Length: 432
Ligand code: PLP
Image 1 (cartoon, rainbow, N blue to C red):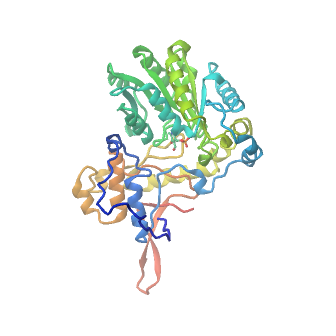
Image 2 (image 1 turned 90 degrees about the vertical axis):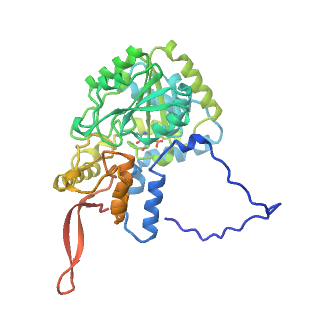
Image 3 (image 1 turned 45 degrees about the vertical axis):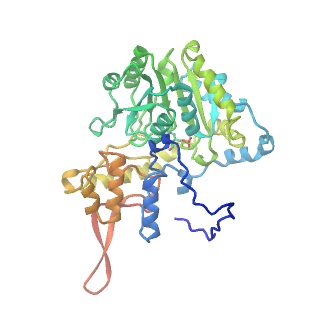
């Protein structure tokens, strides 16, 4: 927790009458974002009490020493003087051309610079896209578990998230038939996160084709969050959805935050593909919304072309011996040794999604309030809260740290008063 040495002095008030609380929008009450919400606040409280909290929940590589390539940083520096004016609402042309070049190289021949929108991270573009698409009560099919911004953005834009399951028993893969069974007259879109946060699942070509057919049959828009597209392990193959979608309206989201480890630059993009006539209203809506915020942060956009055209800096991290590869291996091995945890080996992204073996943890019932009271240890209390956010899984994600996740060695006193390590399998500790 941060402590500021600033005293708050109330400004002189015109009157001393009590001021009633200012009411926040009812829409906010519906929204949860645990990464920076109640759970994070609770962790900060424990930290303030002097507890050692290992944070496993955020894919912010820069915080853990992963760096952006020097030539990308230099491109921003070199172009700062050219970044002082607003640019086009869709973003600077050289960056959009580089994005299209990369999409073409990935087999998405329909990509076009006029149909690319650059935003302040994928986060902004998810919000803009759902705002352009949804009317009150419209439904969006989302994966469960999802990256919570998708649920939040759907709700804040008047929509209703409807979840299709991606259970561990199926290696966290969705089923096209189950997705189709959830379609109603109010359904507008199917959102995919591939490779997936938080499960690490990577979807096969056959599965994606089946989902495209569902969208085609029911005239739904495909929303494909591919921000982890090049973070792959053990030879997993990523297939861009837009390559398979043909005329079906498809919005693909990507950015610099993960593959280029440049979260703080706030650079993402959205590419529209599919029959132009089918997408013209959405394209117009997006153009309007993008114009209302004038443009995305300009300096960061100069990082796009050198990132996409420069050398591949992610494969050395995901290949055997690379830091991401070894971290993932350590998580898988630690879970395999644990008598409390199971995990489906992630095929991509920066996360793992272990589940707690209920039988091995008697009394651990994420749905029960008594479980929270019984769990006096902060770790267990936090795990309970995580469990409420992700009902079937008590531990949400792993973070990208090297030499991470060894079985935690609790300290115990020997007879002579010397401390010696005692292995307690199941508790994991990050070492970085
Ligand atoms: N989509 C997914 C699946 C993510 O995991 C994240 C960040 O963790 C984002 C989008 C947000 O990306 P950005 O930093 O580009 O806003």
